[in-house]
Amino acid sequence: MDVAQDIVKVNFSGINFEDILADLIKEIEMRNYLITRVSNIDNILKRRDPSLGKEAKFRYYKIVEFCNLESCSQLISLNLLVGVFMPVKFVVYQLIGEDLIQISYLKPTAFSHLFKSNEMTVIAEKLEQDMHDVLAEIDF
Image (cartoon, rainbow, N blue to C red):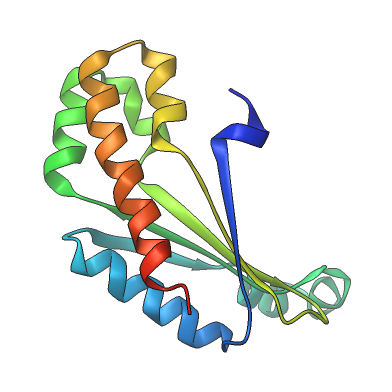
């Protein structure tokens, strides 16, 4: 796995963080994916120890996890270990003092290649295209 090639990073500016997060979730759901969880890492730091929030380099940090139950079932049926990469996720964050909002994700084809399965790669390619399309739709 090559981090520089297998992790996609897209930048957005000129939009409010909450708006881009809401648009991201809406676009994911429109493609028949189920949002399984949104982890609010920024809020956790502030609640657990206020001093940690001051030391963090980010203002916002959200992990949006999602899956399509049909694709998920197909992948798991091919290899039970594929669950270590599921559900797939977008990481949405903004550094302190910056206007730029960044969204990143691990390409599903990166983990599918680890299993050396053509069937898995076909499913991963579809998922990867959907993730690309989601980001293209929220590009303002």
